[in-house]
Amino acid sequence: MLLHGSAEPREEFDALMADSALAAIVHDAPLMQIEAALRSLGEMMAKADPLRRAIVREETIRRLRGAGVRSPAAMADTAFGPLESAGLDRIRLGAVAPWNETVDGRELLEDIAKTVQRFVVLPAVAADAQALWCLNTYAHEAAGVSPILCIGSSEKRCGQTRNLEVLSCLAHRPLHTSNITVAALYRTIDRYRPTLLSDEADTIFVNGSNAELRGVLNAGLYKSNAFVLRCGERQEPKMHSVWCPKAIALIGRLPTTLEDRSIVIALRRRSPAEPVEAFRYDQVLEQVEPIRRKAARWAADYRNTLRSAIAVLPEQLNDRAQDLWRPLLAIAETIGGNWPERARRSALELSDHVPETDRGAVQLLQDLRMVFRHRHAERLPSEDIVNALANMEQAQSSGRVRQGAITKVDLARSVAVFGIRPRVIRYGHGQVRRGYLASDFVDAFARHLEL
Image 1 (cartoon, rainbow, N blue to C red):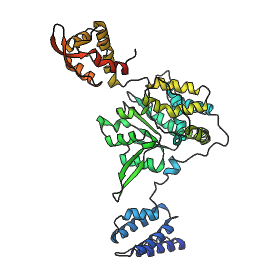
Image 2 (image 1 turned 90 degrees about the horizontal axis):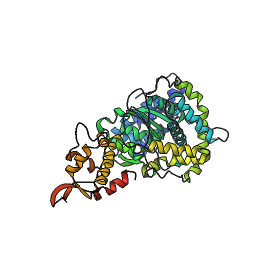
Image 3 (image 1 turned 60 degrees about the horizontal axis):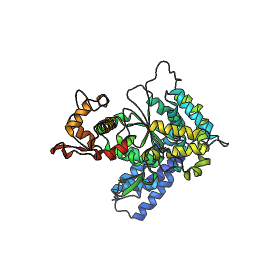
Image 4 (image 1 turned 90 degrees about the vertical axis):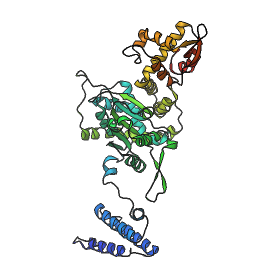
């Protein structure tokens, strides 16, 4: 194999040397001879251009395979280093130089929130949440939890993609992607530690598909176990980190396990009375460079403080929501001013939602509590319960009663999600019926309903 094709003497010399080293990799060559050839090739190709390096690598792999090496690609990568995607770090993941002076965190968060609101119509609490999340991408290694930022809507043209574009101008080492594969996801995160901005997730999770991808994303919540185990070329297990900030945009809703790991921001289509500025990526990226530099400086100054920070979390939040907001509230409390109050308001308002698939069941619980209270009953047959529900106006709008009265089968299926099952009860004058005890619902009422 002749690698030289240039008239330049130095390049021709390097090509001849590479040919000479490759010639040493032959069938049944001693491992010491192969090692010497690979070291020589590695040194010669260290400063070669990407195309020549790739060609020499491929020829090396071919010769190693002919020499009987079982893992030729792995051995070549050890000699040359793995091939890198041209320009990825430089163009999309380049780190900005931190600001030269200390940074006022309150002003920084204000600037981030206002920048988002220049191009996207969203409530103030959502803009505040995004500002905190953006700053957290710079201080991410100080946190133990990595909440997904979910930007969703019920229909198209609500600004999800635009919102991600704005975040890509503000976040640390952003990598914008759509329809990513499982292998590309964990390898990219493990190698580059980007802020992953994934668009059009509704096309990925169609009808509950892509369970493996969901599993990888789910694994990235807690830093202590943000790893997936995969086998490499030698079939040897290897741990891949999936720890990085992630934002996902979609029409509709994320799978429930992912949504439970997300701070959810629901966008609506803007009205003519809600103008936004025209967005030009290159222009905005240049305009907000001071914001990125200030964010990098603030994170560098306060990363150690954040590692030991213990945020005061709203008691109204459930355990998972408290975990999600913990790093953002730590940032807000470290910065001070009115940001702790703003962060808690955002946490409460953005967490104050029940998934639509559960709203009907929770409403039904409210109706059932009213039925048992009004009847002053400790037990009721299923038939009596469904008749009472059918006569309640509140039940008619609960989402469970549609086109007529709820049936006993509907009732059983609905309460089964709370671990409640119909049982045989004695009712009235010794009659044996299938129904429910009021005590069956005590735990569900306490967990899901307000007093």
